[in-house]
Amino acid sequence: MPSNQPTSPFDDVIPRRGTHSAKWDMMEAIYGVSPEEGIAMWVADMDFRPPACVQQAVENMAAHGVYGYFGDETAYLDAIRWWMKNRHGWEVARGDIFTTHGLVNGTAICVDAFTKEGDGVVLMTPVYHAFSRVIKAAGRQVVECELALKNGRYELDIAAWDAQMDGSQTMLILCSPHNPGGRVWRRDELEEVAAFAKRHDLFLVSDEIHHDLVFAGAHHTPMALIEGIADRLVMMTATTKTFNIAGTHSGNVIIADPTLRQRFAQRMAALGLSPNSFGLFMAEAAYSPEGAQWVDELMAYLAENKRIFEEGLARIPGVKVMPLEATYLAWVDFAATGMTSGEVAKRIQEDAGIAANHGATFGKGGESFMRFNLATPRSLVEAAVARLQAAFGDLQ
Image 1 (cartoon, rainbow, N blue to C red):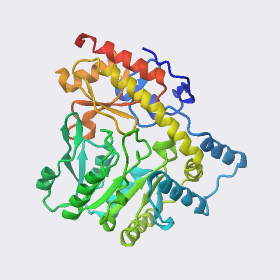
Image 2 (spheres, helix red, strand yellow; image 1 turned 90 degrees about the vertical axis):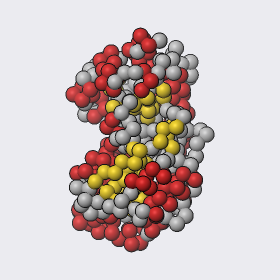
Image 3 (spheres, rainbow, N blue to C red; image 1 turned 90 degrees about the horizontal axis):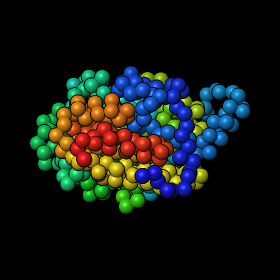
């Protein structure tokens, strides 16, 4: 049934077809779903405009009309520091912050700076697929440490992972909060991960790009607040997921340890990287009280989208939505339907006309899942639920 919630700016259906949107303009080529009739629920960007303060920053740049190199990053860096302190209780020094071309780029530089060809890089799978792509492209080995699925949610399986380590592994990439499972790791779990990294002498890269997108009842702890790990820790954060400005390709790599910081800086210099001025202007505007208010309103809206989606799919026998503590990405298990992953994908793409991510692309443990992006106007979430119920109607 349609929601009776009051309308909000997030309800606006903004046409994205024909705008060079990967999410909408590539879904036919990849999934066979028509952009005219289909619903794009795959790429992890939102179908919402960013806060007015971000839009104003872009308009100010356009009004000035000169797009030169960005200089004096003080206000930009202090905006990051203000956000981390006020939203996450984390004190960050200005000199610890590097700006990369997004966090996939940040991950790639970490792999390049702190590992060598042939090294094993540990991933807790299923996990964001770009990690494995970067690792393999760099000539390193992906080591998949599968998360334990217990009572419908992911848990660490440290004992099993200890048994997998053979000394060839040199780095662990943590996804916190977890994508695609939506888990917010508890402090004690983060302490276990830190201990695991120390025990096996692994650099620890903590990708926390979803750290602002946490639902009521869960609390995100930055890995930087875990004691005894700073000498091997690289933190990664960004405005891009939080404020839907992924096209700026900007991200923050934050390194407190001076030795690690120097190694990272050397690789940045060797690669000739410098920031995109659009991303810096937009990030400075976003990390503000106005941006914070917008995020709070966004999370309230997403919470209702989540409720509608979870309750709607609960009516399909054999379909289980993993409890979503963070992110706007629903991770749905179709194992109990008895269907193959191919049969499930066919029904979703051809019968329901929905483009969603195939679980196998996220690594071991993801084979029976599909990932759905709920950061879209409520009318499209409601339409997607109705389509999925119809596509699997013979199970009801």
